[in-house]
Amino acid sequence: MVDLTLSLAPGTYGAENREGPGVTVSKRHGLHILHLAGDLSDTDFPTAARHALGLPLPQLAGETRDGHGVRVLWLAPNRWLVVSGHKLETDAFGEKASVNDVGQGRSVLRLSGRSVRDLLCKGCPIDLDPQSFSAGHAAATLLGHLNVVIDCIADDVFDLYVTRSFDHFIHDWLVRAGKEFGVSISAT
Amino acid sequence: MLEITCPYCGKRAQKEFTYAGDAGAERPNLETGTNQDWFEFVYLRDNPRGLHDELWHHSAGCRRLIKVRRDVVTHEIIDTGAPSDSLSTGAS
Ligand SMILES: [Zn+2]
Image (cartoon, rainbow over all chains, first blue to last red; front, top):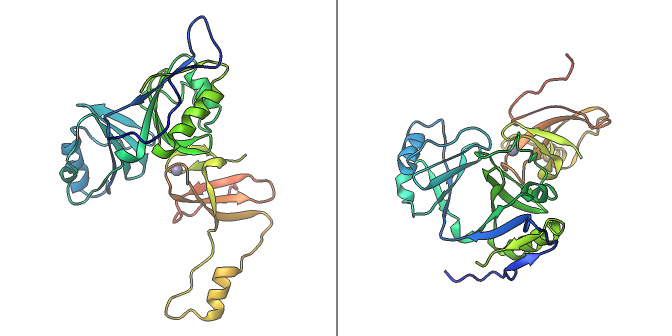
């Protein structure tokens, strides 16, 4: 797919540290992203979803699960984001599910580095303390004034799902907010 | 800023929510509601001092409507729940 969005030129922005930039931003490509909706209290839906995904749906608020190259994020009651490196057949989720391919509409940014939590804290109202938001947690929330999904991959690694048309804005925001830490934008 | 406990997501900042009106307004019956009933439902609201039940939309989170019992004098949030829940009075 032709990438029509403007991103910042690769390079390091803001403070220069001896230890290197505090945050590194890179774009994740080739992901298939589905929005899945279905009623958990229905008997057929969770079973069909489990077969389609190869893992059971996360049912706790903000819970994520992964395996077999598929990552599933709880977004809301009966709503999930399904992220995979390979294409999943939408029919496999059964007739009781509503599945929408939203991959073309999202940019996924991988943020990593020692200052990544400090940077996100500047624009995100959820509690990002490692005690309460660790690997295995994701949240639909705000960053700046944008609706985003934040997925904690590891202690200092996060994936950020943003609406594609805000790609440039979010890069710009990250660079400005991260000025004191130094932000490296990787070549896409 | 208020902190509102979404019954689905947990405690979140007010910034993530959009106020969605009085949770007590009752829609008139479609068959028997008079013009006056509809006028009152659409336009007229009580303006209580003290506890007030309101709907909030968790617009930047789970995108569900929730019910919030709030003291409009102190901004204290007494209880929250699904729109169909009956909330506690806060008196323990
Ligand atoms: Zn919520």
